[in-house]
Length: 230
Image 1: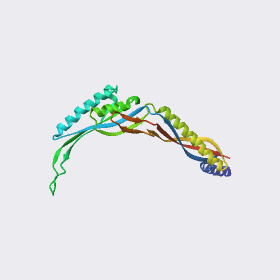
Image 2 (image 1 turned 120 degrees about the vertical axis):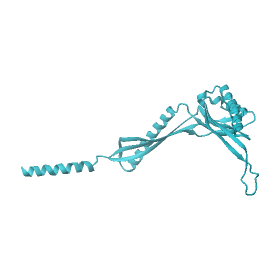
Image 3 (image 1 turned 135 degrees about the vertical axis):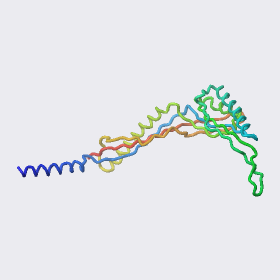
Image 4 (image 1 turned 60 degrees about the vertical axis):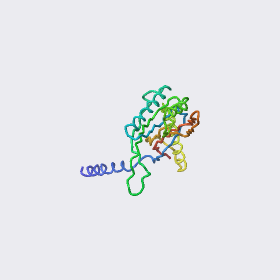
């Protein structure tokens, strides 16, 4: 009876150790990358108005008057208020650089800036909108970026391409090692980049602003763990 208890004790110690260290399959981890492109259907523009005056209040008042005219020009093209947002507002002194010697430069006046970020959802009128705001008083352009109003279908295509890319990579490595690809053990999204501008051009002409929207591209990455079998 004592010998049986000793044997069972040895088995109870050894079995868990074997279970923790053994694995039925070798594994391979790969990162797949997928891309998808589409023609953009929306643009985000950042521009502003800056004016100078001897007093800070006068500079801000003049800037505000011009911004009101710019917003009116945007509304004339059907842009909703929700697509027009103030993104920066500032007033700062302008120093007289003509001072010489050791004296501190004096304040020659003040400059006020009001910056807007605008979404244009109809690219057919984008050039006309830019021309209209320039005529209304915009004198600073900060940037233009194209995007998709509904990026989900393009992102889904990029993700499918990422999964396919991961499978092809894993098959290549498995074949090179003399093994076969088994089941998927885990999948983790490694990241998806928001649509960015692949190509965009903007030039100023006397009568209008010429725009080339190009394509936006979305990138998705996924980490996949496969089993490897003989």
